[in-house]
Image (cartoon, rainbow, N blue to C red; front, side):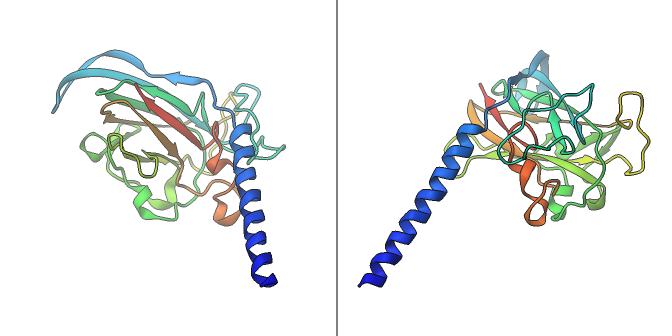
Length: 231
């Protein structure tokens, strides 16, 4: 009887510790400033003529004097100057029922993606992305630097939205230019939003630390994880 009692108490204490840790990390993980998509006009789509908005992002391999990077977070650690991040924000706002065109300047080298699915383009118009002017539906798994993978919260009842685009890596031996970074790869892709909703996005390429390199910045807001609000 005592053994069962102590087992229950141990489980409850463990649950409390885990819940407290999650709450602490959530509170400490402040959202970056909102990056609002720019409406540039309208576009003709298979759903008729809709608003057309654009978003510009960059992916940097580390901070620099010219790019200060995001604030330190609980999962990154104090010395985080060498971790990659999306910039200028990972908190994105998009207009509802619109065509969204995202352009990403990607400055980082490759880290082979574990799952070939994430070396393919999913959820975009025509299932393709444009890599330095070339239309492709996938890239080589060992040439992936990061991914932009947008999806719903678990058990969501809002409109479905899933987009995943692999980010083409620069050569690992590429020379830096005057700004301290190599010449970037330019990736452009478009997708449709539906009605308003709250979504999350993250990188699915192992670019962090910890278990199989999926710790640290991989789940860190401001770095390799963020939110998308459709309004």
